Length: 460
Image (spheres, rainbow, N blue to C red):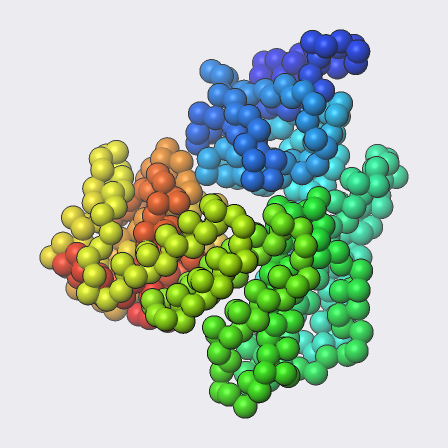
């Protein structure tokens, strides 16, 4: 019945005359199984476009007039996914939040490019363990392996274009979803190889190893918010800054590089090579975030770096974020009080972190339903830590997951309800607890911070 209603909705759009003012230029709708929010929200880059409330059958529909062609993303809290829209599209989507990306399927006019983008996203996720192993290979062997993975995806794209010819712009986005993930792995390779092999320096690379850089547009406005492109730029500028510092800044004799110098150098590179204002600001923000999260303690160096960042950034929102992060780091130093944060228990009651942490040494750790491998690994790790530290209280805080889904997972996996809590506001807890990755933990005793930047695998 649901599919019939959705089909009728699509047919009603397709039946409209293109000359009729009553017809939307773009239709995007669908059904969400096991919804985690009442709304679907549509964005273009960082700009809000529209939001629609799910009906009683968990269906939604956007009728959009006069929108700009390009990449959008739709948000069904706490998940989001890319969507390419152009005039005349009539796209339906069906997904199950328990397997958000894996279950997502598009149909209708305009669906081909969107299905391709989600397939590439899933393919890259599946390849991660393979590529991780490949980092141990010598440069030429690594190159061969990466070319092989790329060739499979390029063939898939060519097969798609035989049946569904893509415009130049569409083909460019599809190709970007392949190329930039590949390029990012190559930018990471020297450092991952050094770490895996335990060597003192990065390997010597063939002269043509970075030939792809010659054709990369560092100011691609159409890809400003496209994750594969942004990830590539992040690793590229970090790579170039590091190599340049080692070569020209008399840092090669130091046992480790000066992190402040390195990040200032990275800011300078972006400033000199990226002209597109929005892209510049995003990259400045990423560099600043990475620097502060690495430093972990307020200092004159930190303030000096923030001052430099502020002179370059023209985005007030980003500047406020960085200032809040700096304040959060300052307030999480040892012997400081835990933040005044509240989380939700399995009875849907609000409980403060201080209340949870009182009278016992507590380890707060974090997990998300969308990170399935991490979910399995972290709970195995916690089981071992409980045996090793029976006097500690290990408290899990769930992030970026709907309350119902979280509660269901606690029940299904027979987790200790007394020590499992749900956070509704990811942004709030991310800033207050400085969550930069899900392997971090915060250790406290009697509501006082012991170590706010600990790691579940290396600190305990």
